[in-house]
Image (cartoon, rainbow, N blue to C red; front, side, top):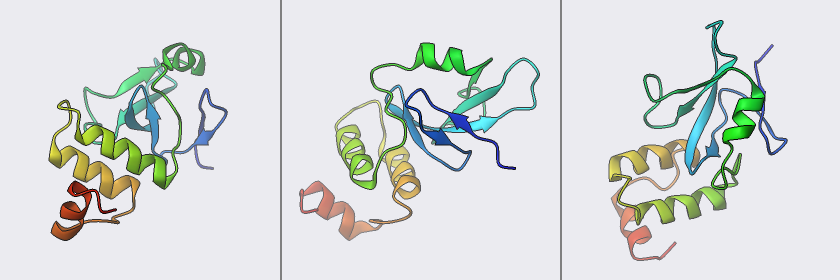
Length: 121
């Protein structure tokens, strides 16, 4: 049985799903730690000290901020990526890795990067 988590949006995610939590892409990570029910792992920075542990779903709901949206469509991820490219908190390598993950490897390469910067896609 695959472990899953119901987000405050009512959507159910598995460890393979990427969703927007407080303005950043995360994945749900089941944990074997008795102190926590699960963790949220930032898509690019996850797997270490950046993971956010939660003792239960209620704590997640209490931290679900206005920039949390749950799962996004491909078009919504494209919009998020476009907005994030203008945000100095993100670097190009980070956004390229996120783009490869959320868009399934679509739009990679030099030409597509040029098209994107010129607003031709």
